[in-house]
Image (spheres, rainbow, N blue to C red):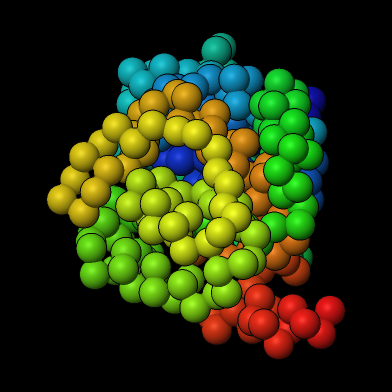
Length: 283
């Protein structure tokens, strides 16, 4: 009988975190011919969305939705290295340094990384596709606004001041990002995707032709208003923004976004010479 590896992530994990974990697990599973199942916590980290509300099926992966209470019980057993019961089956918790054997349960990103290191070869990052109706809505926006001929500007503002990803929700850091972007000529056509109302307003005011998807900024902080992480509609909008960014001609990627590993060749960095007047005239 084919063995199974099951994984799950902490409640606060977002979609990129979960897909990173799954990529590690699948790397191990493909080598050792395991079946793969991911327990999708319907938690605040994904705006309480079920997997099928967001994404199309992932080839070779079975996804099961679980509620926050179930996820807490599994977490507690995993942290104590006690076997995890899922359905009628028990799964031994994978521990770094211990050879995996039989059915395995793998808890969160660090353990899945250790599991992947049990096998040779380079891990292949998984890309996901939003559900069909979100893709259809995005395709209409992309055509109407000629997104394929625009520079995508993605600015993800970090809410946790202790994380090293910048910018944080601090005015000085937000203004530093705005100043760097403002060096780009005003006539460049752009698509903006950010969770900060201030960033959106300031960047849009610099460019003569800027488009973005409408959204609510419901969370008020000292440095401005932000998208509320637990708003389902905001999560749907984010997935549509991802589709738009992937269609852009070039992309400034500050803070990262889902599937960004699939379009690395489009990414540009400071000093953004690819959108300077001299570069544009030479095309």
